[in-house]
Amino acid sequence: MDKIDFRSDTVTWPTPAMREAMARAQVGDDVYGEDPTVNELEALAAAKTGKEAGLFVASGTMGNLTAILTHAGRGDQAIVGEDAHTYRYEAGGMAALGGIMPCPLPTDETGQMDVAAVESAVSPNDPHFPHTRLILLENSYGAKNGYPLPPTYFQAIRTVAERHQLSIHLDGARLFNAAVAQNIPVTEITRHVDSVSFCLSKGLCAPVGSVLCGTAEFIQRARRIRKILGGGMRQAGVLAAAGIIALNSMIERLSDDHTNARILAEGLARIPGIIIQPERVKTNIIFFELAAEVPMTADEVVNTLRQKANIWLSATNSRQFRAVTHYWVGQPEVNLLLETLAEILR
Image (tube, helix red, strand yellow):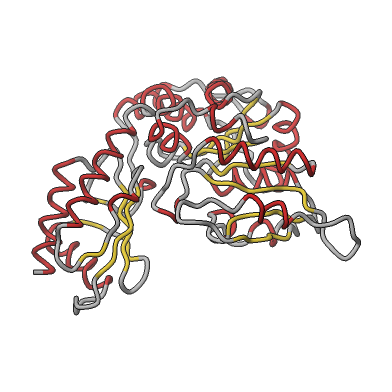
């Protein structure tokens, strides 16, 4: 890469193998269902998640919105964590484009909603209230250090959903990180949800795209919603080819990113002026803060890192940072970030 970029795993460039596969990809018109490489990717994604069918979409946000609009309609309610990506970071799409009313609930330090609170949030059969149709979940939970939520949580939410005849959609942008971190098959998580979307373009390193998976009937309806959203791509096999490489060869290596994140978190804990809880780092996302006695702002630190070492880092507010490890930042880059940051704060 042309910089040492810890801002996100969305910055990953495709690997040489992906570029080769993209150049050689067989293509057709995907809106007609005739792109063989897209069809292969969708079938592979469905098999990986234990679902009947898949749908290739341009982004994680499109995958989530497509799912939400397929599950629910105007005036319906979706229960969601108050710091979930679908609620906070997707431009209000469910409300703006679907007329769907979010019901945000608090989450704990790992990103879990209280199961009893979820059940209490289900609207009664009363014309004063919207129909509750959907529960929105996330794994790993981005706002809480990318914490990998356990299958038991999803099983408990499934019990509530079945009792009230609700659907569950999982924003699994970093789903494979969550599974790898817990050393479990991804299906141990996905079997408890009706639909799941996951990103190919984060830790899995593909340049573009996500896949939405569910029943064959659900995906058939979702395909129409994708078209409404402008997501009907044509010769998309050149993109899907990289996604196939990602699913076949990039999942197991996510553990390397998790190891590097723990090394980074433990190193940050040893730097005077940094506040961090390294025990909270389980996948590839690290949040840390400047101590009150540090005279610099987060933006000043970020700018200095760029000037001194071409290291790019995200400031989430005036005192807090987020760093994300991925394929293109290994232990040498982690060590350089730690050394440079310690020098800046000395």
